[in-house]
Image 1 (cartoon, rainbow, N blue to C red):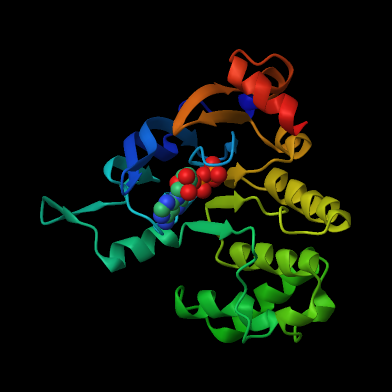
Image 2: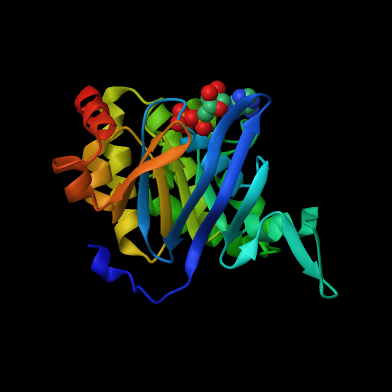
Length: 262
Ligand code: ADP
C-alpha cells in the first residue's frame, strides 16, 4: 500500500525534535517523524503515551515546548515576516488550521445549532464561502454520510453514531488537506461503531487526504493505513507498514500492547 505514496513528495506533516511538557510531565520527548502528502498513518500505543497530544499540537490547540512542527512546509510556531522569523500570530495559525480537519472522540458539535448550520458555520466564517454554496456542499456531505434527512435537526436529537457522522461531515466541509481522527469510535455504543468505521474507511481511501488517526480499532488501522507508528512514553518505538507491525512486531512492548488490545 505504501507504494501509492510518491517517495519524492514533500512531507505534509513534519515533527522535528518536538518536546512537549505539561508542568513536570514530559509527554513528548524529542519526537521526529514525517507524514507524506496522501499518506494515512495510525498512531497506536498505551494510554498516556502522547498520541492525542500530537493531534492537538497539529490542530494548534497546544504549543510545543521546543522543536518544530511543519504542516505543508509551514512552521506552526514561527512565521517569516520581512525576512525575519517572528512568533506565529493568530492569522498564521488560522491559515494552518484551515488545512486541517479534526474529528474528536466526543463529537464536539455546536449544540445550539442545527446539523446544517454545524456544517456551514466555519466555511462561511473562516473560508468566506457564500451561505448558499456552503449549504449546497453541506447537503452533499450529509447525503454522503447518510443523514440527508437530518439537516434541520439539533445534535441532541441524534444518536451518538449520527452525531459522529455529522462531525465527520463537518470536518470535511472545510475541505481539509489533513484529517485528524482521535479515537472517533470510543464514545459510541458498540452497535454503532462498525457503521462509522465503514464510512471513514470509504472517505480515507477515496481521496488524497493525508490522515493521522489515533485508534484502538486495529482492524480499521490495518485496512486504512499505509503506516503504523507505535508510541511508548512519548517516543516512537516502532514504525512500519501495518502488515508488519500487526503480524510481526519487532519490539516486545508492541507485542505486549497488541496482545492486550486484540
Ligand atoms: P494518549 O493519547 O496516548 O492517551 P495523551 O496525549 O492524551 O496520551 O496524554 C499524554 C499525557 O499527557 C497524559 O499523561 C495526560 O494526562 C497528559 N496531558 C495531556 N494533556 C494535558 C494537559 N492539558 N495538562 C496536563 N497534562 C496533560
